[in-house]
Structures are given as C-alpha cells and as structure tokens.
Image 1 (cartoon, rainbow, N blue to C red):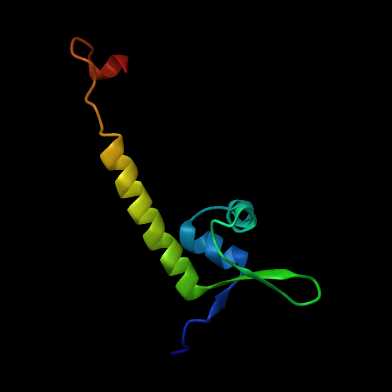
Image 2 (cartoon, one colour):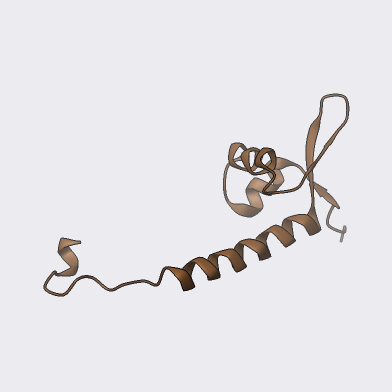
Length: 83
C-alpha cells in the first residue's frame, strides 16, 4: 500500500473538503489555507499536514462561533411549519 502523498493538488483538497477547486483556490489566495506555488506554470500544492491543521482550525473556529451564537428555538406561538 502506497503512502499518502506529501503534497496535494487543489483538486485533491477540494475532494477532501467536498467543495470546488475554485473555492479551494480562493482559500489559498486569501491566505486562509497555506500553499506553495511550484513549477514554471505555477501550480499550487497544499501539504497534507497543513490541510489537517486547517481542518482542525476550522473545527475550533466553528466551536467558538457556536458558543458565541447559540441556537435559539423557534419563537413561541409559531409552529415549525411557519419558520
């Protein structure tokens, strides 16, 4: 069984995150997801460990968001069909 590659293409990252390559490219260009540009054509690569760090960071940020913005049940007097 082959070891996982050290670097992933943006398409590989998109598959892992279940999103589009365009969304991953935007994450990279904004600096949210660290990546390197290699070769004469400037192909982007994301290190597998960096992707895992990003995923863990998103779990932490999401948990903080949920803590700061608790879910509120539907207003009293309104049925769930009205929402």
